[in-house]
Image 1 (cartoon, one colour):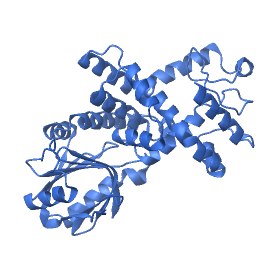
Image 2 (tube, rainbow, N blue to C red; image 1 turned 60 degrees about the vertical axis):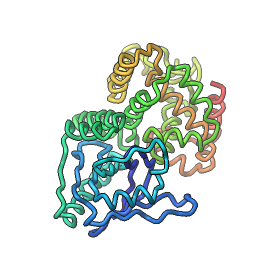
Image 3 (spheres, helix red, strand yellow; image 1 turned 180 degrees about the horizontal axis):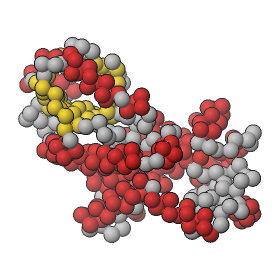
Image 4 (cartoon, rainbow, N blue to C red; image 1 turned 135 degrees about the vertical axis):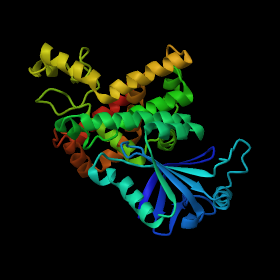
Length: 370
């Protein structure tokens, strides 16, 4: 069985993923990035190398495994990665490895993957002790291992997923294609705890990401995965289509009241006869009640008070600038794949016309000038 880890923690070393994992009845293998020179052979954890397995409850979109290894196996993995040579590296005295799953979509198939992994472990590693941890014990374990910010991210996503399951079916369907709202808000909290930037400092940092490689490096550091990054460029286009029912263009200008509806110009706004004062108020209320906005507001308040930074970057600014930068670097690839672009935007309820490439290019130009 193959799956991908979003991140692997080995002592103070963080392996940023996605990292390919392979599990069979006798061993668990970690397949390292083959870009290394020379390429590293997989690290194999045999059945006999495992002393105990602890895992978080599956009511989260970022579950994890904690593997307690024999001293010899743990030492071999450290040597393979050559991490002991770094002066700031700290080994885990309990010889543990933490494996964080990469759940990309809120679909039954992928949400069932962690349970399938555990079934396989239970069946073939039965002589090892397998312990399920509730939220309190899981966060306590992460903090005791020194992974405080990941503990925060895990707590936010577990809470978010619990609330997601309580949403009515029609609201859950909104996340069928857009399944990354949880990671957007949890990574914001992770970023604040790690960097504690003011709005001005953040704007300078995001502006400095001149290449796609630099942008990807930043995003993977805050737990964004490749598919999520690409999806955000598609969501950016979908979220900026003009709200006028007779217009298929895109705009960056939002209604000043609800901050949801967008219009190319005043003429388009006049044409949107459904956007009454009552409808505007409803959109404003819906925007504030979104799960991600509620959790983001909580995160901002926590870190503003904890670090006494009044001008700390807000979630709205953080996610707006990140998505804008993603679109800047990925838009060219999307426009060159027009059939794929039309298919993906149709899933996001975007009005598709023959002028789509021209309209998207206009959005690219407007985004650069903003």
